[in-house]
Image 1: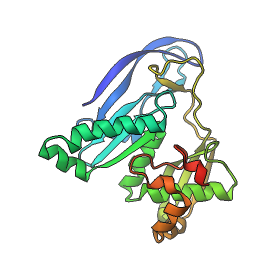
Image 2: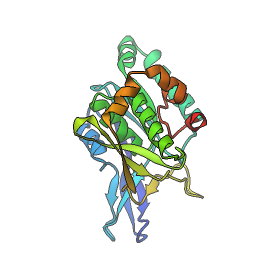
Image 3: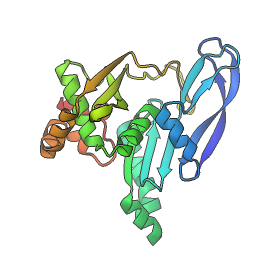
Length: 241
């Protein structure tokens, strides 16, 4: 079910306060325009009426799209760690789909399910799945790029920006989102800018090489073979890099 709540936002630029709607549940079957906003990177970017600065708000939400067979549990750095988040969402999934009526069980059997941290990660899944790409392979390609640059996946975050002609992958480079001190977990996370500070490209042959040897991915990046958290940056993935 699609649900929003009103949040009294404070502009990080000028301090102006104004009400914004933030989501709790996103049932895209009835809101296809939200899916397009997510893919365009414009979802939950609000303009301050005081100074016109744009601010990106993130809140936990459950994203469901029965037409595309997608179930994505969205968390933020303000909410549960990955272990607690997976346990909670597994319980919800089991109650709704595995122990639900036959029609719900059939629906659950078709759906891809993921836990993601933030709307950039949610957008990335939608974009690559729409292009027919495997998110586990994309995560392995990210890990390869970071290894070559000798970058730590805890300190540099790659999110798919665009799929170029020829199937080459263009990644946006972000700093990790930090948890603000003293902020309640119930408050939306405020991200003043959604602009990446760099871009990195992986040629299509990198993806194809990884796709041709899936067992090697499980050896190099064991965590991306989890059924929920498929992300080289989150969870314990860095232990294997």
